[in-house]
Length: 395
Picture (cartoon, rainbow, N blue to C red):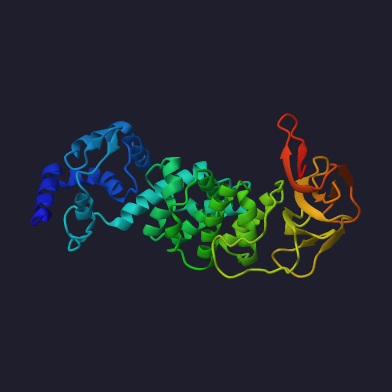
């Protein structure tokens, strides 16, 4: 309504009777204005580095404008209160020369630092991953100064939100490209900040958007996140970029995982141009990581042979395995004794033949099923951890 500007000015003059009262409350008011979701007293005091009593006391003093809700959540009398403070429409005539004005960049920087402290303390694993170490180094000087840490959940969800809005692009890229951050966001099913990546410029933006879309799809498919993200990032990452470090960490992690999912390698979840085309007649597919090089491989079963290809570079088959019977199903697992990859081939003649997919050659083991094998699945025995192979046949 008309005159709201002056109504709010009068209310703030009533609550904050002098400059000292306003300066004491300013950090808390900045936090309320910039927060991406309502904060509790505990969350606000933690982010500000205050004890609860101080925060609770100030909340009581400003309760006319910022009333406490159920669960000690700090509310706002009306959205137009924060619009008035920050100069948003319809109060966009207000500026830094006006009383009780909150600079949004400063407010977001306060929360960005609180989130960064939480990410450094609880998320990053600088000793294990180079991408985490780079992020930790990027944040080291940024987090200096007064203030506390945001809650882990808030930091995971909103760290980039506040960094991009306070123009901390280098720190945002470093955090977003840290493997632990990507993995923990995926574990918590958090994909809400994809839009914020559009603020970040260059190659990293595209790669990170891909990684987030793929992490979501990987969870839905029940396959390892690192495998799909790495295969998407690696062909396009500049080795000197933050995304390059993330891709390298993903490669190292992927090389240690038992990858047994049988599926095509058409990783088009994030859209874009076709990356690679391998023209081969295949009845079934399986993927694995060459433990010697850490590079991805795709096994294509067709006719009485299995051909192993590089799905990144394409080209001719690296290995061709002559099976001796028509191949109907494939599965990949790790030999628990040696750690080497093994390829199980389900055949029309009722046999399952086990091969070394890297070296090729003759079958290492032949299992007689007794009927044509049309599907295979590998799982771990919960009692012993040993691999087990399930086969599906027509009978």
